[in-house]
Image 1 (cartoon, each protein chain N blue to C red):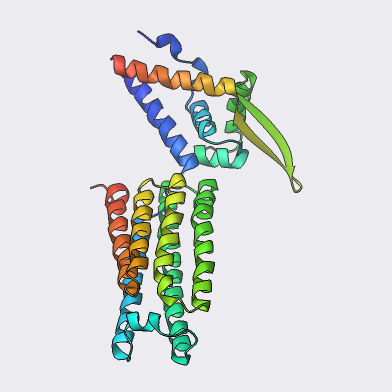
Image 2: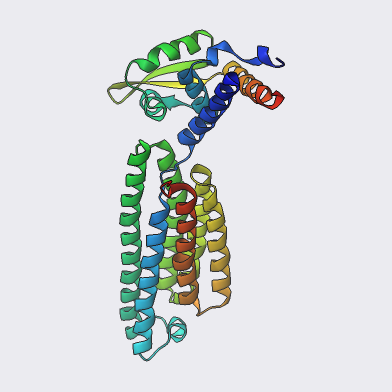
Length: 214
Length: 97
């Protein structure tokens, strides 16, 4: 029996070393939950802003490009989106570095770099494409495209982090595609994709891997 | 004790087991990354590395990154094969009991 335990421990050790050296596992589920909350707050601000104004979101994205009120609104929307992104990144970094410290790992190791590269390359392409869409006045495509490229980034980076990210990525891509079809409903899909899905994914991951054992 | 002879004495130590595990899933790993992943202190790694190198299970590469010398490690074909056999042996022993 003693022998057996050693063999089992050896195998577990092998597995943990393989994972630790190739996957970025410090990513905290709580950062997902907070990103979701920020997204919902951002979307709510945008929603009520449209409620107060004369246009609905759907009418707005179909309005003619270059109209003066469109440009002003666009600045506002971009500012809100950037604020959501920035606060999510900062909170994500804080929770993740805390988790890494607990695990006795460095936050910025090789697997973290690989994961980030795989996540941010599609995001970069998607971001540029969104700017191009805005330039041409195709505002309704921005929400679907952010969902699709974010999902693609997650899908690719799941190889270097939690496998579960893959399913989140697939869901985001599907939502994005549906959102592109239902042109003009982008705000709703965006709220589901960046808000609801993040909260669900983040809490699942938190309870699966991080919840302090009693 | 079926499969007993499949276990490789070279991988009995936890550190060497860790080194081989890391090198099985990564191409070249430098000294600092290796040390950090294994959670070792300085100097502890060297003796294990040299014993694995002597068996030709791993290869060592020294190069300059800027002005700093950097040592990196990779598993050889032989090392990967032997380590895989070792893992299979462990699994068989556990299943057999």
